[in-house]
Length: 176
Image 1 (cartoon, rainbow, N blue to C red):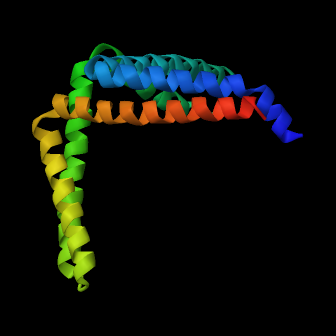
Image 2 (cartoon, rainbow, N blue to C red):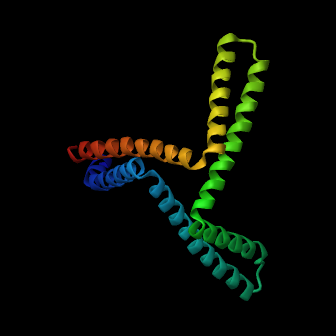
Image 3 (cartoon, helix red, strand yellow):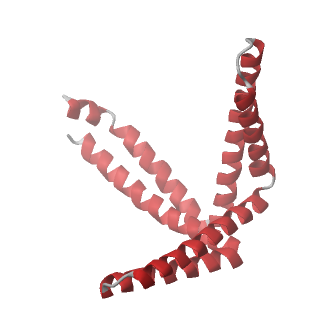
């Protein structure tokens, strides 16, 4: 019985696959523009959510309920939405630099852990992981826009693969 309901809705899976495929192609062939659009979109969503949260805080205030944390959360959400929507490039740079710093710290931590290991295969694994993470972090830190574009292309490739898998699975469901 469940197979019948799944096979009737094959088109929804195919539609999701097409969306993933289109996003992937955009991310591969226009990574910077795609990333900026995604960040602006996320900023607009945060603005809408923040305004809704402000209405909720106002409603709580009118009904003499606790509203302090709701109001603070709403103001922070609106502020982040404004920053993401209107200062997209600077926000992208800050996010990528923060990821770079995190990767540098993580890479150093992995190398420290490696020095405490006794097993040769484990040591080698941690050495490669630590060095790769460290190099990734340095590249992110000193060349944020190029690395953000590279990450967007990688996400695009994954989206294309997922899109193809979803579409093929949808047509298999259709034939059930």
